[in-house]
Length: 293
Image (tube, rainbow, N blue to C red):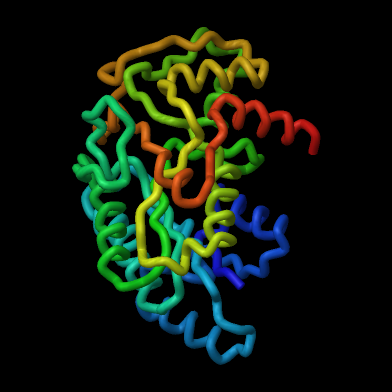
């Protein structure tokens, strides 16, 4: 049986669906069921599981995280980000259960121009990135077995999720809008949550969680700017609003986003035979599937 932490988010939901597809027993918990940043709550949860007679978890797939990139810069919010993104993974590792943990491209500064490899130096430039890198370090030094999977630009077409795709679909179909302005100088790889979930379950099925803790990258293949991603979303969803490219300097945020977030996918293919499909193909297939439901 696997434990899925952070089950309410778009990735947690997708992981649960993928586990069902393969008939893998799992227990899915949201923050109310297991606050991974609360040491007492984590200890009590695993003690109760040990007494329940349901059998031990073979693996934890940790989808729980603090992801509010801009809010993390506000006074008092850094502690919350580090609690969820650094302390939380370490507390899970103390359970002795192997972990598949999800991290982010924000551990890099985005100053490069070729895809980042798993061993490239990490230089986060935001509180969020620092907290996620701290979580990676905690897991690498914990002695736990498993995998840290870095990803980027995760979205889902699933109804009820909140992400860039959903925002662009909504705004792009608003007839009262004259144009939709989207930054065109940040490059990355859009990642369908369901494809990432499939990769995590594949790693579990191949026993990656039983190996000493190691790093991998997973995104959909290829790259684009946020503007190009938005254009494709509006086109495929039949939107009526034209998309206008703008520089990052015209879009005020508290955090400097990485200008280049493309991650190398060499290791995950070489070690586990996982070859991500192109991001345009993934987006089109997800929309086709949603229309058939």
